[in-house]
Amino acid sequence: MQLIKYLQSQGIGSRKQCQWLIQNDCVEINDTVYNDAKADIDPAEVQTLRIDGEDIVVVPMPYFYILLNKPADYETSHKPQQYPSVFSLFPDHMRNIDMQAVGRLDADTTGVLLITNDGQFNHRVTSPKHKVPKIYRVTLKHPADDSLCETLKNGVLLHDDNETVRAAEAVLENPTTLLMTITEGKYHQVKRMVAAAGNRVEHLHRDEFNGRTVENLASGEWKFITV
Image (cartoon, rainbow, N blue to C red):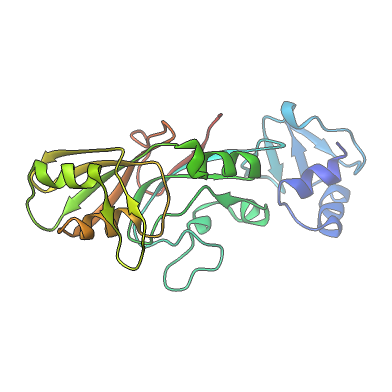
């Protein structure tokens, strides 16, 4: 791949901007300064990238997968309405790259969020027919017993919806903490299911998605992963 195209793929800037950076010896890859826009770059071999002396996060190519521990009060949208976008948690140049969240989390929901530029992967893990498990830690407003779990597993009819939905699993850790597994992704599904079962969600955290957890990431932290 030509150097100028590589820089554009990393979100560094427009073709004209990248050309200027190259001509002014501002591009350093693996500790080597490049000033030829047509220089051949193997993306797999790029370990470090500096632009005008500043270290830049190297984005894997052609596809990348990000695991984010989503904090509260962030919207899973490129065009947020009330809160900052989760994409604002990434470096400036990465926000120039086309990437999408794998499903959504409500602004007040925390935990595992996957982000990628791989559309096929996104479709595969969000499609209901593939039944990819998502485990939520639900803080309940009212103390509950095992009857709540049985109701959720047997199925509830969501308000304004004529379809019965079931939890793949539901277990109480304590009277106000529910671990609930679903394999669908309906709008506000967990909150609506708990409400239909006669309780309310005070806080919602996604513990696991497609086998991924965020136990080693602080709130707002992220990392590239392989899938």
